[in-house]
Amino acid sequence: MLHYIRDKTAVPYFSNLVWFIGSHVIELDKCVQTDEEHKNRGKLSDLVAEHLDHLHYLNDILIINCEFLNDVLTDHLLNRLFLPLYVYSLVSPEMSEERRISPQVSLYLLSQVFLIIHYQPLVHALADVILNGDLSVFCSQSDMQSSHKTTVSAGGVRRFIKPPESLERSLELS
Image (cartoon, rainbow, N blue to C red; front, side, top):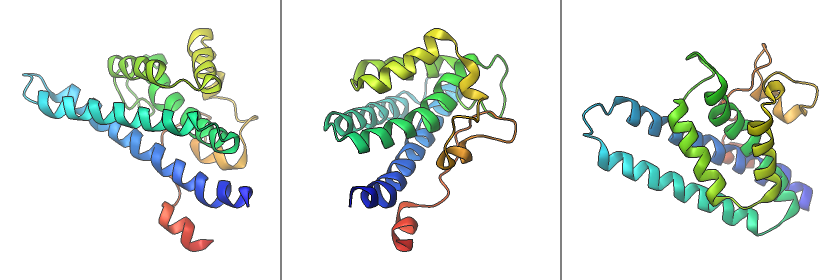
């Protein structure tokens, strides 16, 4: 039963949740980049507040301490959001297709992740990549499981991409 919940419900739900949060982050970054005369302050404030709500929601899920759910959520957050969207935005010197948000926004959002999320395996893994400068997470495919292959391009760089199917569609198939 736990395998069914994890594979048929948790995986597609978390995949779509992470995609939604990442899309929201890209919208937040666009708002910052196009707000030259500070006309979007209200919208920007709302986007930041919504992102903080997302982080609190993720933390609430993680502090339930259901191991198999935490493993799935941690994997999705690291491999499909934090590394390809937040961290890669900091390490990529040029603006490219893989870098979707500005380094300033990325740094701010990462600071909020470290302030709000208290699940140690996730925080330690993210901090390890950032502090040790291990860029191999963007190139290594050897440790990728079959469910993660869609996050890695042909060149080996992790990318923030849309999930292959919606939650509703995955539930229809089961």
